[in-house]
Length: 550
Image (cartoon, rainbow, N blue to C red; front, top):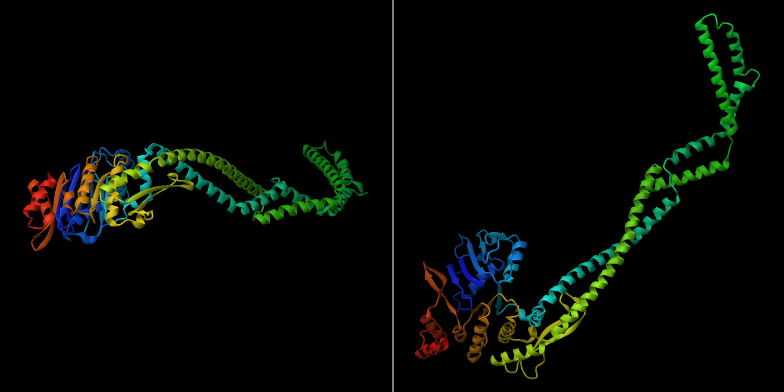
């Protein structure tokens, strides 16, 4: 509930303050006195764009403060979510500096415009004659039907499930796109992996093979040179080991002469033994070494495979190839997991859709039970407001798929005269018809929807007389359950006020100032009489005003 509005340095307003009734507050005044300025200031509190031309005094800040009682709005979670101090009285302040800087505060905590707009949407329902009225909006139309069907809890459960369902569908689409765009790349990765796996790589084999190839390529030279060496050392007539043995025998006679000679003789004997071992190894190498063209071809082919893979992958060792193979195995495994994820997510989405369709069917059934009685009540109220032939029709059509609100397309259609075609409200209703239709529908759902403070700006446009009287009665009845603020030119509506404010202009220091005052009972009578007959009011107008107020 809007308790108080304080405005300073805005448009024609130097400074003023309004205290609102918790029921019906009426604001009247002469044309051009500044009633719309009040709504402009309130719009700043609601997060509307600031205009730097609004300053009454261009050297000072413009400040608009609105004081709300939010005890009945269940906003604690909203305040906690945005780290705002929660109190049952909330103060929203908007400041504009002459330099063009704009700031907003909720209970003295700075907030951005998005938070401000979301909060005030829960606090103020502003109906302006030239706005895109929410009665035009099919989403609001559906919201009214759901409120009358008492679908709040069911719809909340459905929308929670639908958010998960939608998020999973997006995730599935992303996974499928990822899979499809990656198919060619993955095929190439699989090809590379298969090639490496088929190569059956062994760490260190390249060095072994290169050494073997070098030996095989020089087999004839090895066999010849090592065979010749063995022959010189052990087989020829003048073989080296035979000659050394002859020397050893000649030295043996001197072994006992001195320790030094004995040591030299022993060392020489050891040399002969080593040479004999070497000669035998030479013979073994010569015997085992053969020119093997077939094995050379095998080794060369294997090395060619390794060299080709290394060149292809830009490396120089088999160890590096094995690391690449391991990486490819991981990447292709991840792609296989992607397929599994898609399958599992698809199954989950199918189950979610089944559950949502079941809940949506319940919502639809409850919605379709509402239009007949709703239409009848609206027709009755329109008849009271001198629209006896006007008709509203609630069309509920099946949607092709699931939406955020179920499987129903709800639209209000309107026909103002007998025989007229039913068309969407936005395409056919005039300003006066919209005003009356809006009032009728909102008053019918006022108890079902937690409507905030209802502000009507010239909802009486295009009507007068008896219709205005009945509209005033409806506003009065509505204000018994909701706070209503109405700017009006109609005396029949003004007479229903619990608090009646009069907006006026005065001249001070050669400047025009907009001001406002709460009218006392006698002042109300005179103001309403002026609305009836002009200024000064006639005696008859004063009497009629007393009757209206009485």
